Length: 246
Image (cartoon, rainbow, N blue to C red; front, side, top):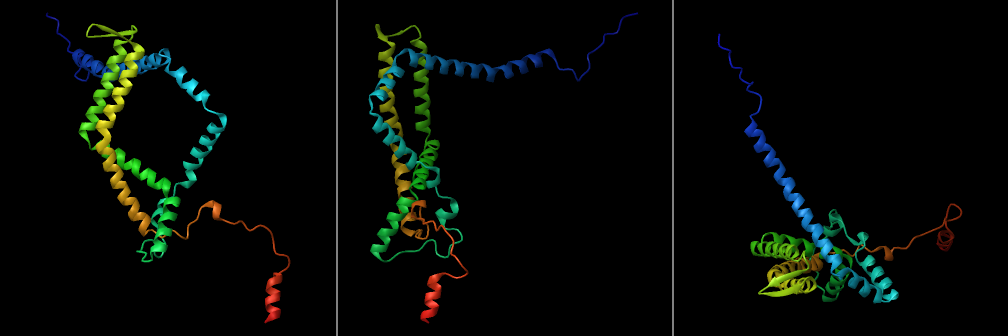
């Protein structure tokens, strides 16, 4: 009798399918590993180029008083408590949060108060519009991607310390400095349209909000006066004086 061949169950995956799945599963891992390797190489080249030491020397040359002043000013400028909520920003629940002020003096006072009170909201709006404008600008995204690829290429080519261009040896410091300057001009060329569009759009929205929003009832914490203490007795003395006078 001939032995019957036993077929594997249908639910078992085939070897080729498993190989394909393993290959496809390892692709994201290899890409992530390559990206991490490039980032580590860039960090090592930055440290070996002496740029970090130069930054430390520049920071050390700044007087301590200037550092303290900048730190205090920055902390006060970007204080989280200065960011107004949606309810305060748009006057939700108020009787007349927006209206046209016809008096020029009152309008100027309103605009000054709103710029002082909502400045962090206005800065956040400008940054948000800049990011949104950048996302819908394909040329800027492609340019930034090509610039990043150029950085990766230069970092890989300068791993041995020099870069050969047109038969000339360029040191790593020279290549890094030249690429920084080139990146600055390139980003200015790519992002100037995005910057001006975001700045004009946010400026228009800020002027409309500052001119129409009546936020006179809202004050900063510096304008609040804390009433501390208790009034002895059941009635205050000035109330008694007023009652006696009546």
